[in-house]
Length: 354
Image (cartoon, rainbow, N blue to C red; front, side, top):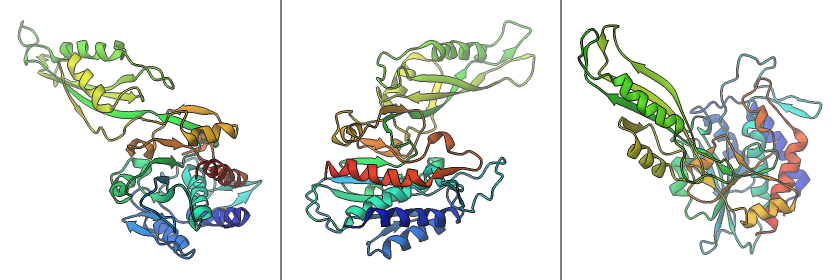
């Protein structure tokens, strides 16, 4: 069994090396190389597809259930407010600065340390599958979604995102809908045509006022917002079509497909989802991993932000060191102590189960 203090030191050093390598979404090949090398140097057999690296524990047993440990190594681009070099991993006053340090570098290296802690353990009740993935920040198709078929049967997952090690037991899904209301063109001066804008208004009012019957314990009602509208070409022509966009934040009370079906039953416009991939997620508060966290003083909550949880069809818990409020901010940082605490809490939670 590897020493936790040593794992903590290795995790911090690895995070510093990761910060120094630009790894914008779709450009994560160099950080994938580093992660692959780091694991292989510790005698872990790794697998790779594009910029995603995954591995199973040494004594993997197909007859046992498997726990997924997942976090991402891509970052957003640094914003204009940075006063520091975003790729210079400096530690000052207990803070490790650098792009991706908080989102989600601290979580990533902590979960990798946890994986190594259990890697050579025999007689576990569960297997471990570590997946360090790409394109999370853009919800891309070449990240976690690409390798899920390769990972085999998974019982539940821990998704590493900065939550101050509190337990995000639910996460909203997202659907963006492109809607088209159809009318008939005509001259505005005469009683001609069928104004598509007026047809759209009726549907927009439905989106504004409709309340879905089932509501989430964590989030309350589903939220639908009309955010873009376009119609017409000139002042004297009644428009034949009106397009508008709806942002739908789906809760764990429904599946995306169900929400889409209900919307289509109530509006007259054509409704086309850009995607139904980003699903709401939920894990039962009585699940052993949640109960293990609660026993350690962690609180449960519903997360308003979207992560790779949305791509999983298994129960998953979003939890990790760092603070979501620091994500995507200028001069991003993670407290070094948060990484140590994260590793310890992850291990304590998992020890009660495995």
